[in-house]
Amino acid sequence: MTATAAFTHPVYPYRRPPELDGTARHCGVMVVGAGPVGLTAAIDLAQRGIPVLVLDDDDTVSAGSRAICYAKRTLEILDRLGCGEAVASKGVGWSVGKVYHGDRLAYQFDLLPEAGHRRPAFVNLQQYYLEACLVQRAQVLAPAELRWRHRVVGVTQTADRAVVRVATPDGEYDLSCDWLVVCDGARSPVRHMLQLDTEGQVFHDRFLIADIRMSSDFPAERRFWFDPPFHPNQSVLLHRQPDDVWRVDFQLGWDADPDEEKKPERILPRLHAMLGPDASFELEWASVYTFQCRRMQKFRAGRVLFAGDAAHLVSPFGARGANSGVQDADNLAWKLDLVLRGLAPARLLDTYDTERVVAADDNIRNSTRSTDFITPKSAVSRLFRDAVLGLAREFPFARRLVNSGRLSVPTVLLDSPLNTPDHDSFAGAMVPGTPAADAPVTGPRGAWLLDHLGGGFVLLVMGGGVGHDDASALAGDAIPCQVVQVGGSAAGALADIAGLLTARYDAAPGTCYLFRPDQHVCARWRAFALPQVRAAIATACAIEQV
Amino acid sequence: MNEQRKGTTVLITDANIAAPDDFYEALLHMHGDLTEAQSALVNARLILLLANHIGDMAVLRDAMQAARAGVTGMPVEARHA
Image (cartoon, rainbow over all chains, first blue to last red; front, top):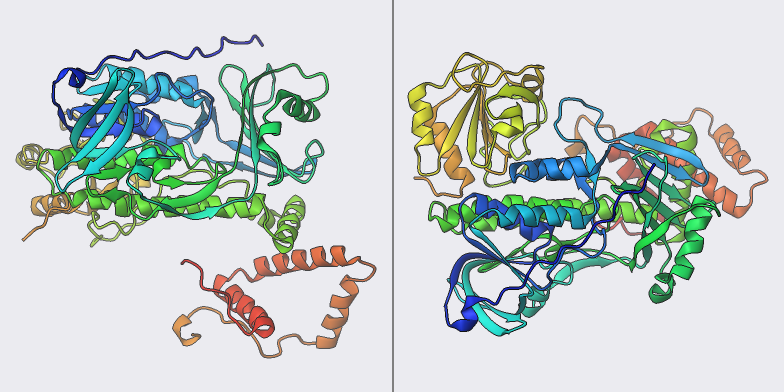
């Protein structure tokens, strides 16, 4: 195996903003923070034709690898944004996780036991690659403007706008916008400026992340050790990344000194204990972290919307940080688009809060449970943890209790006010509020169902049943809805080549599924009726109906 | 509370073991020669094995409540649903 070239950090040029020379500017949307979440939001908005200005205090991508595990749903969102293929092909795909206790395998899982999906359960990719890819995409979208070395130093808001004070190398200026999307990370300076808090739990433990460059034949799978011989009484996590980079995560305990532990002379012996005294590797990046599971009470504060780590924090076990942040942006962008165009009321943005708070609580609950297992807080918690790990060697039931991180899956928005409750009877998983399950098809836009859901409302109709006039009427509405037929001979109809679409959606001839622009099911029927579809679209846009 | 759970099993608190003295003897015998730490671990394993055998979350919650209430006089604090 030959070592591949290391990533070179791009430098994005600072440009003197015209506002410093007297040009005033008001934006529909501004995004603070050009990380994965802010860039996702900006690309999504720009693809919808909404001018969006992104402010970032730096001029390059993430220094370290940081978030490295991107889940299937995130890849599907990136597909919609034109970045999925680049991320998936550069990343290391994996779906198998192995959990060791001591020196023995306790448990093994496969996150994607089912075929017929375009994307794997996860790909591992350094955050800097993802960010570079997103920046490249945003740069070719005319409505998006990225401003580097533009630091937000003040925020005020009135009923109809937010005003941001921006500091640049050439001085400060003000920008106003209808909506401010804040994606400035866990420490969120903007959140502090607005004196908004997060509530939740801090965990008293410290972890060392080390990225090493090493040629190795270890397979691409997630490996987790409880109490391994090379790091007794603590846990260790290993992930493979592209470019022969490996992520090793050592639990250190609360008493560890973060400054000492970051020094190579402390890190190298730990790695040699794990990989062998003769292992040859290069230390690329290291960091010592603690973590918290907490969130803001509300993700919308007037004209300001918070997304990603700025709004909610989880422990890293389960890869629920960046993945949930990207899903925040996915939820928010289409709503902002409709509100800015005057097609939906501003209260649609309140459903960003209600829907993503449910998701954040889901992520926090899962991540807290994992943390309680990995970092037992009391003697009895430790006792049960060890009992589970011991039993898991012999008995299948105990393997289900082993919790080294429940890996990110999208939250089903079951109780969302944007759903139209079922009146017809359906079996299976695709209840309103569920993100679309993919399936292989043949059709005009690609080989997968998700290729045909695009970024607007889509009515998927099985076996015909919607006439040309009705389809044209829906496509011509103020909030358009494309009708996609499955089966039959109509032009543009999809073929369910493996029968998986029919199976996954419990579909029969005449069955209709209505998808929101973020590809979540929001209504379904056993037969088509135009007024029902229009009413469901209005419901999904928080439009009051008489 | 039990009325609200029609159709599910409730925790059996009347005598249900045919030979209670045999059971009790076996329980103590299981701990024979064990250190305190080993006994604690064996108890934890036993709880997990039995909990899996029972499987019914409502019964398990009732048992946890009953076990704790007799010691503290207080129910398990309400957790988020």
